[in-house]
Image (cartoon, rainbow, N blue to C red; front, top):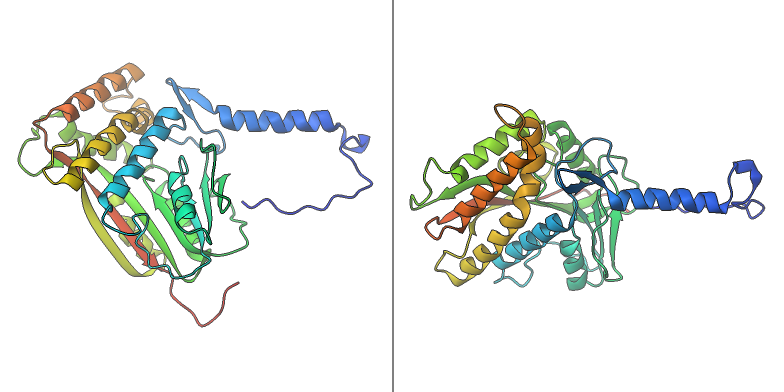
Length: 339
C-alpha cells in the first residue's frame, strides 16, 4: 500500500526499445489507469469503484460523498461536548501513526491530522477522495485493505466508520486480523457502525410503515449478498475474536430529523436527516436490484421506495432514531518494542 522505493538503472530509459514501448506509451497507460479509477463504473445512474474485482455496493460519487460528510458532522455533533470528538481511544503518543480504513471523502482523516499536527494520518479507500486540499501530515490513498498491507510502520490507532456491507463475514475476519497485526503493542482499534433499523420510543412509527420494515429488509438482502448489514450488532464480538482486549463500547440513539427538544440532539437530528436523504439511494440500490424480494427490484422501484422512506422521514409526527455503536479496543501490550 505504500509505494515502494525503486532505484532505476541510469543506463535504461523509458524509451529503451528493450521494453517494447516508449515514454509516451508509458504515460498513456498510466493516464488510462488513473482515468479509469476516477471515472469508475456507472450503473443505475450511480458511479462505483473499479479497483476491486468484486462488486462493492456503495457508490463513489458526489451524492454519496455528501452523505459521508453529513454522517461525519452527526458524529461530531453527538460528541460536541468533548475536547476531542473524533475518537475515544486513549492514545497518548505525541507522534501517532493513524490509519482510517474506508475514509470516504477523507474528512475524518483530515480533521484528525489538523487536530494532531505531529501525527501521520493515512486515509485509504477504493476510490479517490474528493478532497482538494489536505494537511501535510495527512495522506489519502487509493487501495484495497483486503490485499497485502505494505506500510512499514505499525499504527497507534486504526479507525473505521460506516462500513456495513463492505465485506463478507470471512473478509471481515481478515480485516480485523490485518488490523491486529499492523497495530503497535498496546495500540487501539476503533469502529463506529450504524443500524438500518429505524425505531421510535413513543409509538409514533406505525408497524405498517415503510420505515419500520426497512431494517429487516436490508439486513435480509445483506445476508443473502454475503455483505452483512448488521455489523453494528457484531463488531464487539468480532473485535474480541481477533484477539483485542480492554474492549469498550458506547451505544447511541441518533435521531433522524430535528424533532428532539434537547438542543444538541435537535442539531444532530437535523444533520442526520440530510445524511439519510443523501445516502439512502446509494445504500440500498445495489442490494435491492440484486437481492430484493420476491425478485430483484428495478431501479425505478428503488426510486419509489426511497421516495416513500424520505416522505416518512420528513413527517413531523415520526420521532424516529437508529442505533449507532462505537467500539474501541486494545492490542495486548508486550514487553517487546516494535519499530
